[in-house]
Length: 469
Image (cartoon, rainbow, N blue to C red; front, side, top):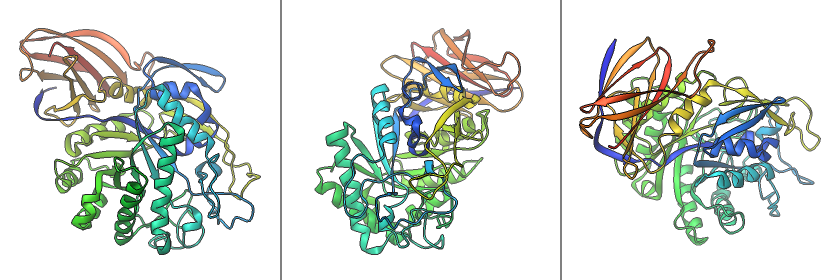
């Protein structure tokens, strides 16, 4: 079985990079781990401690870090209400309890934020999952009593915006972290954010979103953060993002510097992704700002990346939790979510360790180590191949996911070259069979007269680098 892919530079756009959110995993003691910072945000080979043994991993080189602005406090006399389903690691400590600022809060997540910067990350975004509990209608940062109800008190819309701007200013002035963007919402249109669910969350109607965005732009400008853009609205699904964007007034759209969207809609044929890109237009950037699922082999993730880049044309791609249990992470996270917390009502502690590595860690490495920030994303001619070009190095990177049987792919590079060029290759097998490859360097191939032929084994992700283009 064979097919052809024509690599076309027409319509190329600049890549911002790859990233991850901090939130729950970095809220635990894992936020103090140098080896995790090096593995996730650096490019060197790293030995990561895992359940008493070390695992050698290629650094992913993630350069985008999304920092979760928390909503919980446990000060004396606090009236915060805790969901009966939430565990401690999913409660992020906030900096203001309604009376006083506490800049020592959220130490673990802040620790990893700085470690990520020192390891090589260079693009930072702060996002709020819920306003601080004392700004909510019911004092519960997990949501309102009913999921379709807004949980930010109307009277606190401006205060919420000023709170975000104040923390962003503090990060710039005291932490050495410049947030290039802030996102005040997280899946705001969902009706699942209610007082009994298992994480922080907040529903926002369209009018509430528009009001907060306007307040936030004023607050950022007043704090001397006029260069910080507002991202919105981090909707759960591409179709939700289309609906929200189309209903925003022109005035609100002008205040949004980037559209963020999550990837929890399969959208296998790309229709919703295409509609979102068309609704937003070619000029405004989009990030796929949260992706996750519980499939450890990485094939679903690779297919989602390919569809995003072909149909949505995002400038950045972000995974949710890189260290998480039940195969949801790149690395397997082992957390104590049962022991009562002495400082609050939620069960669980902030203990955590790495239990192992999932194949999808190596699958993501196929993309992140070769498609680097500043490269140009090209048209590949196929939904399963991502193509990127580095003009300064004159290097082309091709990443192809083959989720079916063995096939031969002919890559037509003639729009870029007609010379003979060596092609380096790396492969990850989506299987646990003996000898399965994990980001393994393979034998080189040659392009001749601008044509490159590669045989892709079944259920593989292959990266190809060609120089001199």
